[in-house]
Length: 157
Image 1 (cartoon, one colour):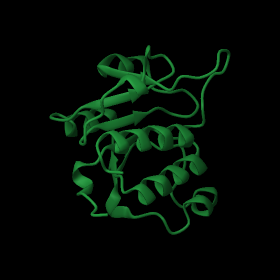
Image 2: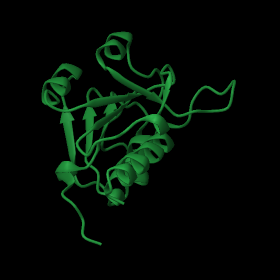
Image 3: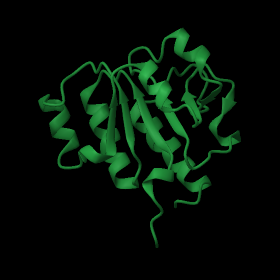
Image 4: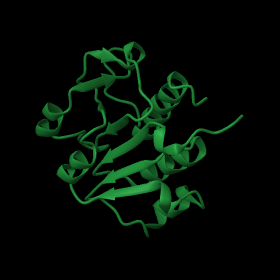
């Protein structure tokens, strides 16, 4: 199978991630599926954290990770691209949404999601349907579900 350019593939963005093992697992998922990852700082840990290193192993490919010093810097870089926020507060399921090849899919902090001001700035907000009375999936699991669906829809799988 011929691989298409990673520049046109959907991208994953993490808003101020705070659990090193989850971020490391997301880096591995992105590396294995050929997706770029964007991290909006500050992170709640250092990349030298032993918990991070244990999970990321040798999958960290610096050229496939872009760091943004702030959310405003991140938004400026997305001026001509669509950003989709994954949130439990959304009313639209990801299964009812048409992903495009250059989308950036934003995931909030494990401990708190994204702040209200960020929530209000993002037009496209989606959720993963879950059983009643369940709060949320692990962010690394959520990334894998949504990245796989977006790659399938955009014919990268």
